[in-house]
Image (tube, rainbow, N blue to C red):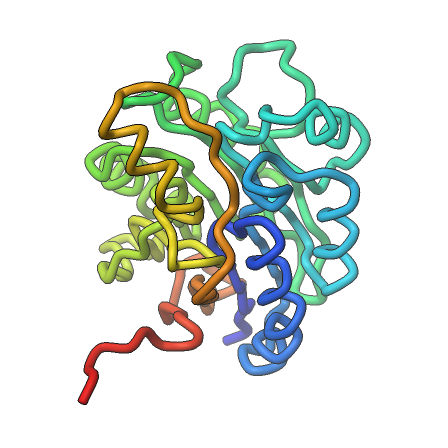
Length: 267
């Protein structure tokens, strides 16, 4: 049976993340024979949004769709970019009238693939219901393709796992993003939906989830706002690969990606 190879790269953090992607994404596309490449770019512009500059870099590398999240709105330039670039997404379940696209149907050599982006509500902004929004958009998409991918940008593990159970068999694959820490629970659900709770971040790990350490510590110590700046060292690329049956729309294989591997032992 024919299959579609989908490569997803987790939250890209500023210049360190972009540098890593520019070096290694072409070889990963070749290794996994990727038909569709999706990246989360909500932190690509120095940790805040994705502008024309970062979008051009990513699309020139072979990325098909850039997904977003709550930090998509942090720079007016990234907000302006949403108005012009339909392949750069923001979460679909923001209130009606919010500019930008929440899903995009990409054309590939294996046919059309729908890429959806939604945001959770637990410990996050009180926006529209992502579960009911998923019902609405799937009613539109299903007539065009059964190859459907979701980036669910959410804080709570329980909300992500609830979502994949809600959508199991109705979408091909779902990744969680936002927490920047890759989980090791990649699996295929009973009705064929491939899943991981968080794909991890692509950027500097000598940090607190991508930002310079001292500012993050001070925020907890003093409970006051701090200026966050992107960290620089010990960069790693995280993501996941899905092999999806083009006839059934179900995931057949998946593989979690971390490159380079983390040091786990020191002599």
